[in-house]
Image 1 (tube, rainbow, N blue to C red):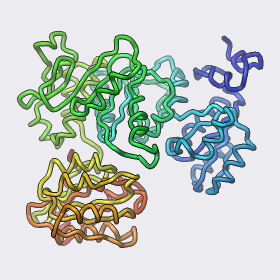
Image 2 (image 1 turned 90 degrees about the horizontal axis):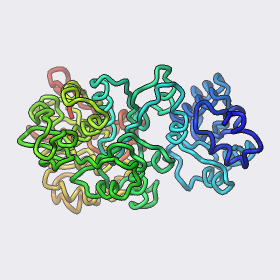
Image 3 (image 1 turned 90 degrees about the vertical axis):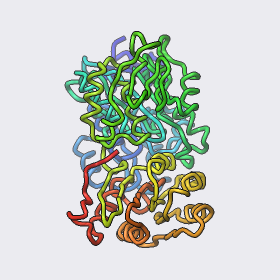
Length: 512
């Protein structure tokens, strides 16, 4: 059908016309699109739709002068007002035919609720990206990754493996590179590795990944989703319509159930990973060697050897949760046809991002670890399990999650705790229940000083051989710009300790 016919009055309702737009090469000209949010995702949506000829109006809350100027440059309309009522009035007046929502907007947000009630089509950036994936003749397969913990590392490592295997690949999505920016690369990609947050999965639409994984599942973002069941339902969407391989965690039965219940493309295989000896169609560890029994022709009796745990230890990748990430990424890359030797080569040349169990250094015999990326209890649990004699810097925005079980589980590992963040009361109460007489110090300083005071307090408690661990189990936006800002401030505070300069080696290479 010709593009002009898709937009013609004889096609049916406005809604039908919008839903028929499934290609970059259809006619998006003059389509009225409201984009909610002016973060990196919202701007990428506006930029893309302006390029397609749509009439775009970005509606946002907090002012962002730099991006507002860029909207003026590209030719997008805009309305910024922290008052939701003003935003809703502007949205009504604009009378959009399509609303594209940035990930942070809750399902019950007044603007999205109004649009849905009016029968207006509402998409997230991922569904829009899926519809526009054919801009270049080189149409990429999508490998989709989610989970409560480990998404970013696994996404980066999977993309690294694909490149090592000779494919043109990139990470995108929740990792910080908007999917629409990746799709508009003029050379195109063979594969895009898409990190998906539960917010993006909530509005996923009917995409069809080449391969997919939910790494693990634990309560998180309950304040946003409304319940643990709703959060799990969102995560399970990653497996829907998967074409080749649904990868799941043998140690997390919920991920296996997600695969069993998913509506997948006929012939798609279930591939497991875990730290134990793998069954056929699984990845795992045998006598200290990571092995692939998922894609070996003789997998019932043989396996490909990838790397050893000792080799991972040399790369600071041997913590149990990191080994799981490596196995999951290996399964996804092997599903896409990357050879075992290329997978191994990629693993042994991979360096994780900062702030994920990053070794900052040693001062006075005390080790300092920056795990600021542990923004939920599940991530903090993984780091705590790998350590003993810990002075724990914990707290921030708990996002509706009860931290008591995390504290109870690891109480025996703790020398003491330093509590930061706005939700201190819940954390202090949990620590009081489980730590007995061990010290618990609340930091009530202004945001600019909180990390300096927290690290100084931790140093007073710690003894030689102990580890001061920043693994907050909470989001950072109460006192910091983001988790990276929190981590940088932690590292700076360690450097300011007596003996924390170059002689104290506080800037050691990144770890797991």
